Amino acid sequence: MSTGTVEIVSVAWDDPRAVAVRAQMDVEMALRYDLPDDGQPHRALHIDPASMVAVGLASIGDEAVGHAALRDRPDLGALELKRVMVLEAGRRRGTATALLAWVDERARELGASRLVLHTGARQPEAIALYEKLGWQPVPVFPPYDQLPLSRCYEREL
Image (cartoon, rainbow, N blue to C red):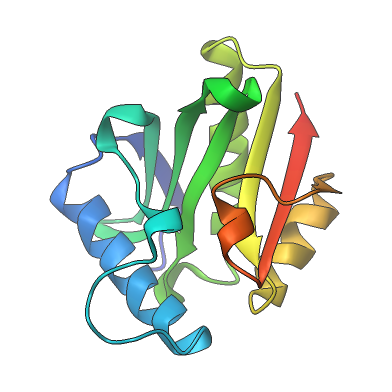
């Protein structure tokens, strides 16, 4: 594990390092939620890459340790925080907080005044972090209303 500081850079959705972090997130979420091991996410979790407006990759030295992205949600009048993940090598180092600060900065640059997110009841660490950073619970919005363990939040910028 690197002992350097966390650096966040903008990358494309299909950047191989970002793809690798999201793949590790998929494995972890499948275990947490007892999902089938067929490699296919629930249709409510499908992401159209064309809707992604910003992707941040956190690194320590040359090692990718985290990911966060923003998706345009004109139907909600907001940008949606997506695919926040910090790998073991980046945990307890401020990586998640740095990623979320990066997201706020990108969202403001894009003219957003409100962010929304979806998480799940089996992600207490994420829920605690979001609430600590001022995210407020809101009713579950589509398409996540198809998933019984969904939790949704919003935050004004």
